Amino acid sequence: MSDLAGTAVSALGGVGFDGFARIREIGPLGMITLRAKGIPGLDAAVNAAVGTGVPDQRRILHNGKRACSWMSPDEYLLILPYAETAVALDVLATALAGQHHLAVDVSDARAVFRIEGAKADQVLAKLSPVDLPALPEGEMRRTRAAQVAAGFWRDADGFTLICFRSVARYVFVLLSTSARNGSELNSTD
Image (cartoon, rainbow, N blue to C red; front, side):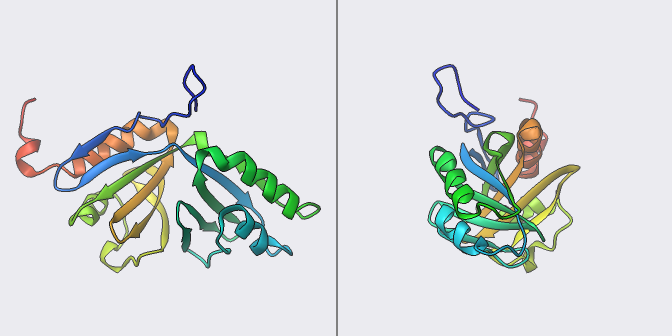
């Protein structure tokens, strides 16, 4: 989504919260949903678009600021700098021409949050039915944050969570409340 000057803006303007874990909205990020399965040239097309291969089931592969995540047996989420989304779509269209696929820019339909700190897993443990201590780095988990569809993965510094932009404020409040220290829950301000 863009402001009046045409500059891409994130759902909540980069809002953040510091509790026993740090919550911050990041973005805007470029995101492309790619629907394809078993077609010739798929791995090369993804590599040309974001510099990774096609990940295995429930995995996310990174290449700097670019990534490709497995979302379902025939769906991948490509993540890249926002300004490069149109070029990546053209690359995919050229590489997969004549092949049965669908590539759609979903950048403005998503919100992205970082959950960081030594207890970042505890924030998500309150909201998602996932065995977080067993979740390895590089595994993409599609699940729920409370009752909202979300996907997240762990890296060395914490977690990245993706949700629909329409519920971004709600998810931020969920994450912030979950990251509050006990004494903050009783404050009246």
